[in-house]
Image 1 (spheres, helix red, strand yellow):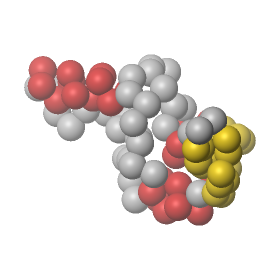
Image 2: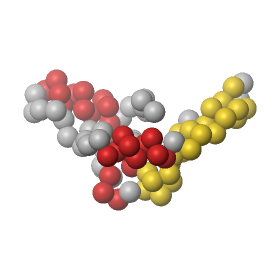
Image 3: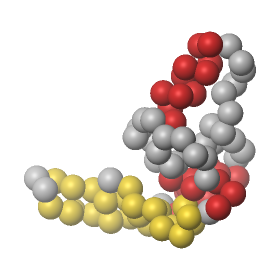
Image 4: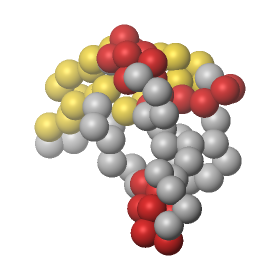
Length: 82
């Protein structure tokens, strides 16, 4: 589970779920059998990803129906590569 704090206003997209790159501070909680076994501060890694460009996917890759559909699905997905 990821927990983000200190939202970055310029990263906000009014659609779907916010990306971890939308926050200055991001903590990653690891659970086992319902217990927290590890908490990592991944803020630096998230900042590196954010600096690489349009990691959040502000826009579809093109105006094709396929790219628009993929973009919408990504905006409403809770999956992350972090």
